[in-house]
Amino acid sequence: MNEFYLMITILAAASGGISDVVRETADMFGWNWKLFLSQVISFCIVAFLLQRFAYKPILALLEERRRKIEEGQINAEKIKKELAEAEKRYQEILAKANADGQKMIDEARESAAHLSERKQQEAIAAAEQIISKAREAAAIEHERTMESLKRELGRLVVDTTAKVTGKVLTQDDQRRLQEEAARQLAS
Image 1 (tube, helix red, strand yellow):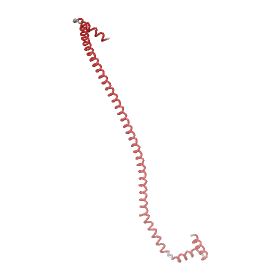
Image 2 (image 1 turned 60 degrees about the horizontal axis):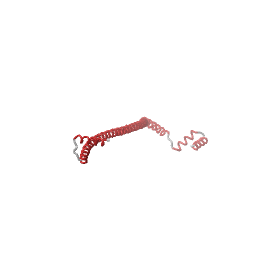
Image 3 (image 1 turned 180 degrees about the vertical axis):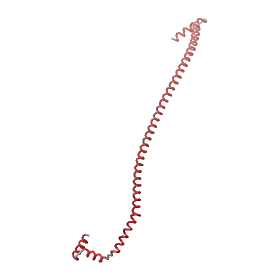
């Protein structure tokens, strides 16, 4: 580019003026000022029409699109925050539900242990009652057996004494011998 200006300057100095150089250059390239002026006017009209009917609507459309994209990004950030909050609430609810579930399980275990202990105590009480009744029954049966044995032993003592002595014992003798045998048995 500098070479072109240098060449024009050299030509202007050699020919005596810049206007001569411009005229020669324009003639050499076939420049027509009327055609140039009409092209400049056409360019200005086209530039004005493009500015008015194309460039401004396109800029408005681009601005609208930029604004929507910006709103979309803001909404996306809001959604991310809400999603994070929802996830946090979900984790809190899940943790609370797990804690409540564990508490219910612990309470159920405790209740089951308490119930088991109570049933065991009831069973022990029932077993002790059965044992007590069995002891009472055994004691009563023992007493009956002892009474029966005392009578039988007394009868045997009376029979044996009667056979050994060879005499018939009276009612008083039989009673006295039975009582004496029962006393010795009791001690």
